[in-house]
Image 1 (cartoon, rainbow, N blue to C red):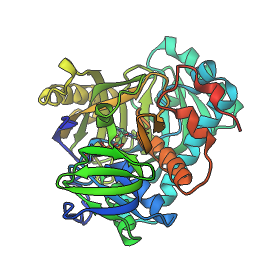
Image 2: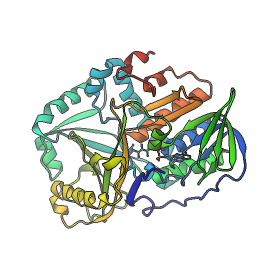
Image 3: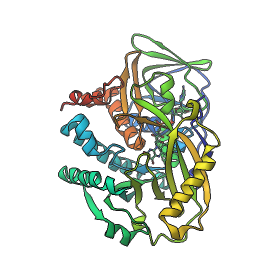
Image 4: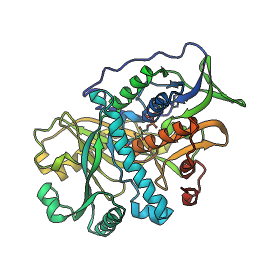
Length: 412
Ligand SMILES: Cc1cc2nc3c(=O)[nH]c(=O)nc-3n(C[C@H](O)[C@H](O)[C@H](O)COP(=O)(O)OP(=O)(O)OC[C@H]3O[C@@H](n4cnc5c(N)ncnc54)[C@H](O)[C@@H]3O)c2cc1C
């Protein structure tokens, strides 16, 4: 089993929801749709399939939300790791702007959807500051601001003086907007799973899909001693999907997170907004409902192709230093939690969503990138639509077999 993360996680211990424990599969069964994976992607699929009245079963070889979802820092943004300006250069204006629009809608939908769940599972609106890490980056960030404005994304430009008025650090310029959100991904997934179960989805933990037999009208999935027969299968298996098939243009790195002890006040942190930057890899920061600061970044290659289990200790200290550099008045703050995790990205900045020729009747959700949750929602909606019989030609854009120029596939 791939080691997805190591360290001490904040989500399970702070504001823990009443987490249900689900049984392992005890008998063979059949269903319309089998979902493999109980992280954010699988939970969103389970919830949306149940809403559409499709009979679904979800299995996870670990426990619910204990894969990469546990390492997720819970930021929702429509602005992506790749700027809109860069996406327009790569894919052309119409598809790139439409993709950014999809992400913006997905943030709103995730907030709305989460508000039908318990309180701990809810995302809340947050503003976001995207600052230029260096003087040289200011020009491209300012160009990005103009591109976003041109296509009616609700962004403001903040110059160095305005940033210095509202934060204790000095940065040459930033894009600011109010269209982001933050939440607790662990609680969100548990809330989705509970809601899906109440609508008839069967959920099994500690149940691994180990083999597949593709029939004319169904797929037989081996899970330990038992078989699950399904008309459709969704692989929501996160970064481990790379063990089933290798997506061209996907790559895995390691990323780190540190969470402080509770902070007394946030007077020097405007609106407790999300903060990130133009440097790559980027640092990013948010606050938590119990008044902690969460800072992530310092991504690096996986040494020997595997996550170094102890590396989070060193990287956590470095993140604390970076935090002290940004907020000198918070120099007394210490780390309460830190973790390291495998992090998947795609070279062109788009997720992988769709079918694979070697897996008939199957769909893959690979929301690789910093906006993984937003991508998971886009994927879950598309796949649910297709299984329910509604055409989604736009899924082609995210094809697992795409070349580096998928724009031509996107037509209205
Ligand atoms: C440090 C870090 C910070 C991040 N921060 C953010 C953020 O702020 N915002 C954001 O949007 N995204 C963020 N992400 C990305 C986000 O975590 C991922 O996009 C998301 O968790 C992926 O969810 P998933 O359900 O696809 O995968 P997972 O959560 O990994 O779920 C996949 C599940 O499939 C199960 N599985 C695998 N193989 C099998 C099998 N054969 N049989 C049965 N079950 C199987 C696994 O046990 C696992 O539970 C972050 C990622 C990292 C690493």
